[in-house]
Amino acid sequence: MVEKNTNLVELSSAISGDFKILGALDRHNLTPSPIDHSTKNSISFCSKTTKDALQIIRGSKAKVIICSNKLKFVEDDYKNKTLILVSNPKLVFAQVLRKYFEQKAEFGISPTAVIDKNARIHPRVYIGPHCYIGRCQIGEETIIYGNVHIYSNVKIGKRVIIHAGTVIGADGMEYVRNGKGEFVRFPHISGVIIEDDVHIGSNASIMRGVLRNTVIGQGTRLGPFCSIGHQTIIGKHCLIITRSLIGGSASIGNHSRISMGAIIRDGIEIGSNVTIGMGSIVTKSIGDGWTAFGVPAREVRRSE
Image (cartoon, rainbow, N blue to C red):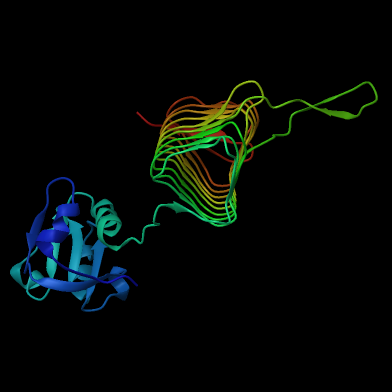
């Protein structure tokens, strides 16, 4: 586990928004830990605002705890620990981890990576071992871990993270039968666009477009083993969780969530701010703001 020697004034520089510190500002050797498995050198967080939150915080061994500013403390609560009060403890804890404790890949290209001579790659990227990079474009501070295969005609934005084993730009399942009933491949002549700040989990598959590009919108997260069909368009800041399957030519609006193992039929339109439940099979289009689940998925409630 990563340990950081810091004081609380320095640590608080990672926090965006208002905060209040109760307790000592001394320098500590801190290690991130769950609040219920902490030690005297731990930094942790508690998002709860219910009655048991105070009991959890008081019983924790953690030296520093990021907790809700909705809670009311007495002096004894921070006599032997430091409390940082914020509106969103989990978010702030993530900010602190990213700035001080996360191990970041150093920019550079592995000597075992195979890269097309016509690829346009920003000098500040990381490309891991045994990757293949075709005639594509890769933006600044993008991180591509090992054994990723990126076909030609793929455009990847800035600060994208692509985990090991992912394939981007392969053909989708688009065929037409001839007079003998044999399959004839329909040429996929378009590509894939991955916008800025997208994260793609391990062993995902994103297929290139047939006549228009497949698009993954800015800030969207794809989990491991997800499959995105040809010329599907996914909006900004969506969460597509592990093993979700999205058919070709589907579309998903902004800020939508596709839960684990869901299947979206090809050609389906999913609106913005939609939630699709775990394991659901979506066979009909769903408008903005709906939560839907089941087999087949049914709309059960709509947000205001």
